[in-house]
Length: 262
Image (cartoon, rainbow, N blue to C red; front, side):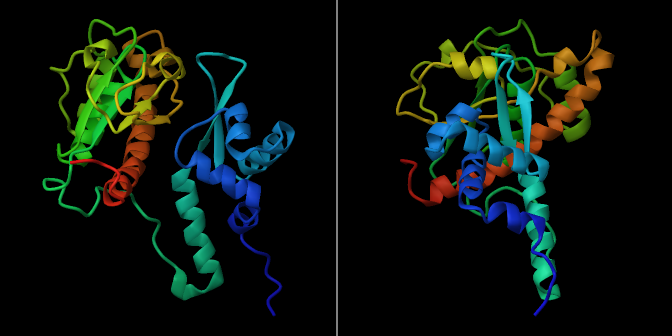
């Protein structure tokens, strides 16, 4: 019998409570008290296992921009994909695989019922329009995508326009921020909040869309000038692109499970 220890991912994920935490965080970012409710376990126990997941590099935290006493926990799905690949290779060389790169679903989106996705942040000038542009791009326009904010700015942040142009060759110069009240009555299947303030203030929409939260800091706070803050926009755009790519699989699963009406 081999004396080799089980890979770190197996040791972390095999615990029943940690697996439950991972599955909840795979869908959305959450605060500790929300995870306590979701898994129905004491807060001190949940915090202990979250610390182990953080120490293992699977989970990260960001300080809430709505309430600085709170933090949001985020599951690094790319890190999980890499860990799963390493786990398979450790068991047998035949199981060595390249990490999965999320991409557009393998379905004919033109014939499938069109999903509706709304991205929200406070100013609708940076994070949410970047997410809107990237999801529209990755689905070739076959998903109904919109973005809005609770206190929209007069125009898009110049670095938001620049980063999607330079990093993804997309043009959003004609896009304008708008208030989410202008979308009252529209049906969405997913409402994704990208800032903590917007998550708390976002109104309800018809037919109870699935709510997802991505706790992403405001990249405009990264410097006093547009040039100084641009690296923060590059990091933010990369983070959003990764999350959007993982969202594609969730959208496909929602559609194929027959949850979306024609």
